Image 1 (cartoon, rainbow, N blue to C red):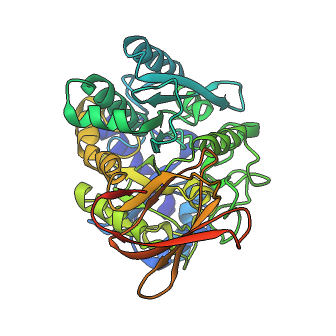
Image 2: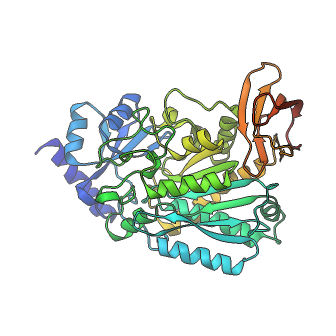
Image 3: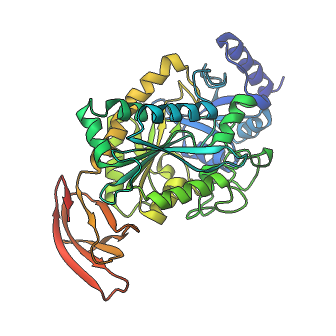
Amino acid sequence: MKLQGLLKTALLSTLVLSGSLFASEDKFLVRFDLTDSVKALLKKSDLDVTGINYNENIIEALVSEDELGKLQSNKANFHYMLPKTLLRGPDEEYKTPQEIEEYLKDVHSRFPEITKLKVIGQSLEGRDIWAMKISDNAEIEEASEPAILFNGMHHAREVMGPEVIIDIIDTLTQGYNTNDQSTNWVNNNEIWVIPMFNVDGNQKVWDADSMWRKNTRGGYGVDINRNYPGSWNTCNGSSSRQGAQDYRGPSAASEPETQAMMQFVSEITPVFDISYHSYSELVLYPYGCRPLKAEQDVISVIGKEMGTMLKYKAGTPWELLYNADGGDIDWMYMEHQVIPYVIEVNSTSQGFQPSYSKWRQVTVERNRPAWMHILNRVEGSGFKGVAKNGEKSIVITAAKTKAIIQNYKIKKDGSYVVILTPGEYEIKFQGETPTTMSSKKITVSSKMIQL
């Protein structure tokens, strides 16, 4: 019997013993030794890399028998291990797209003064993509209040992402006027949440394929989180093959879901964004392509702070995983100066769809410190205000080195919130032309400066 056949028999036996369901399309979850060469080989082969565990020094992929044979011929060391929960499909307690909509409408009916519902667009199959605003004057756009965005489920099989967003919603709405911290956050910010972004893909998870990742374009799907412009198809960080799990689509922003997010972010221009994914216990930040790193050191500083809080590993995608182009965090940062993060919740022992009763509450409680840190950090070191003389941008320079830290684009409503590490800076407000400029020196400490 071929080695692949032996592996198949071993894995099937494991599945029978564990009570797990077998994955669709006769694929197996295989663990490999975590090395740079294995990561490169898996990526080069267009395989479905499902997660990484840095504590155990392993990387997991969902592969067919033929794919496994090719990996074996390249001397990739693998193990016959299979987490019990990865391939069984989601527990019914996780929410469908319809249940997400019902939940949001129920929250709005109970807290109408501090919530606002918005359909940001429709999916490929015509489903509504729902967002909720949580703020003290939810129906009013207040230039003095910074926007913050939390979104879940770019990838359809990653069912824990919406649960973290639901926990954010419940904490803020139920804590308003009963918890000082929640009340302060809601009173001073415009907090936007999108619990379930990939609604079509998630419906397919429930109806046909528990390991479905992409949207449902043409039956093969496009990975929405490889479809954003900016870094689209720039560093071999996605696939041109329709059958690949990271298929980038025929062109940048080809998908209606991508277009909906882009339009929405352009409207609200959040200061921060966290996009929840699973699994690997990571905090990721721009850029996705080797060897680029974000120009602002504050991005990695905050990312590492959240990593420490969560006991997750923090870094860029190319440092911790592999090149990833066309992602939402790169586009948000490049186009709108959002400070964005991907947080990969859960580990290899839980997988994409862990037991709801065992892991849901544990996961959302573990992840609270990070999103709470973001809501606190918007009032941390930096400066904010509303332009009074029609200024369009702010050039921010480090006082000591004279290095330009950022050329900040002021929002359409005239507001600006600039997040910086503590230090001395020179800031120049620029009008329609470079000649119309006023400057001042500021000292940034631990608290936000109101200009």
